[in-house]
Image (cartoon, rainbow, N blue to C red):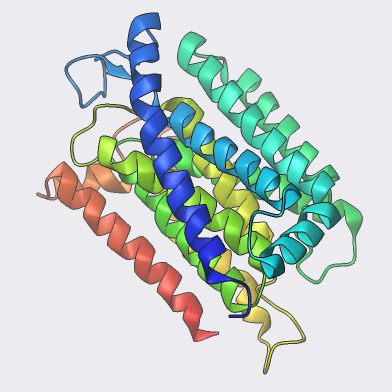
Length: 327
């Protein structure tokens, strides 16, 4: 790997430390302002829990990104890293601004939902606006189809689907954050293996931020992600899954099946989403109204503890990503 590996390490560790360091501050702020998740129907906790996770994860991302841009501008890194990152940042500046602007938009939308429980149509409209912003910036799915309309529609549907899949999977301690960490880890591996250093750095940045959050949320939770966090995790996975060139004619014996990698890496949340939507629709209930038919709930009903159910789903997600190594 020609790109300086210490940049990857700095991305991961920097985001981890920034998230873990800011989380107690956000937790105190949430407790002081009443931004907490109260016990209630379908809730697994018995006392109010601060909704500080998403705010801390975004803080970890933002601090490292700003620090990285400053380090490149002041040439504080390895010369090769400065040249390559500077080139990548300059070339992809509009897309990066849209990506991080979209991340902020998702956090703001989720935070507002946590505070006021937005109507589904309003929340969907906010998600749609962010997805369109990202697609308009040039971050789009093509799937070998030379159609701009197809690219826009596919990209928007993908971002909406993955965002809501992770939002739906924020139902047990550690589940959403752990699936996010595993997903971003596999995306980073593929990007780094194919020399896509900027994408790999971004994915490791997200993985590090989630790693900094998880000890506060699993196995016992002193904070929750909240809708701000689950929206952010889903959005980051959706966008990061679009960025790598899983298929390239420059690879030896390229396989078009490689475009299926994101589906395998995100198989657990996507299949869970499909399952609960099908069950709710069949029961003639609105699919956006929560219940206890998620994979995690079914595993608990089968006899596992909540922690064991989460670990099983983490393991399945990890091996789903491992299958992508086949091509």
